[in-house]
Image 1: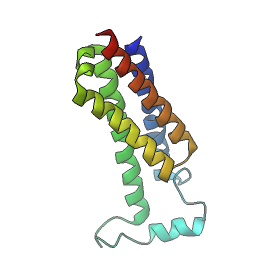
Image 2: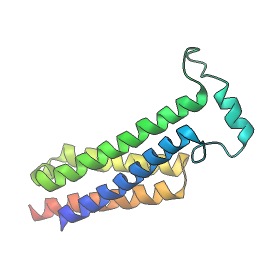
Image 3: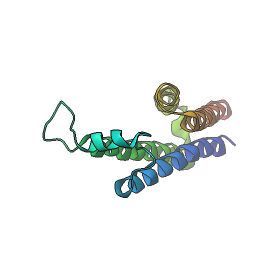
Image 4: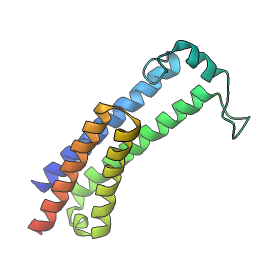
Amino acid sequence: MATILIITGASIFFVLGVLHLLYSFLDLRRPKFFAPADPSLLAQMQNTTIRMRKDAKNLWLSSLGFHFSHSTGVLFYACVVAYVAAFYPAMLADPVIATVFIGIGAAYVVMAHFFWFIIPFVGALAGTALIAAGILMSGVSS
């Protein structure tokens, strides 16, 4: 049961990561998902760079790069958590592993609350709660 909870929680993160990656790819061709609501702002983003480096891509492409890296980070997290739960469940008893798995999920919850919107917040909260419950349950049954 603990493994099922953890894999279910990781699957929520995986689905969110896949959707984020898909939306990022779609925005390369036709900005819609992560584009600003004001179309004139998108044009401004495409015509300016970040201050730190003048040789950087335009601000719009830089922001899409963030979205791609964010998506792959979420996917990596989900895959590692699910893999460990499925094939190396004894590792979940290690307090460092347990803390890292729950801590990263909790960090996504906090970021979603302060910077994003309701869907990633609820998804990260549910995913983290399932992962934490599964880890706690696996520690009790060991």
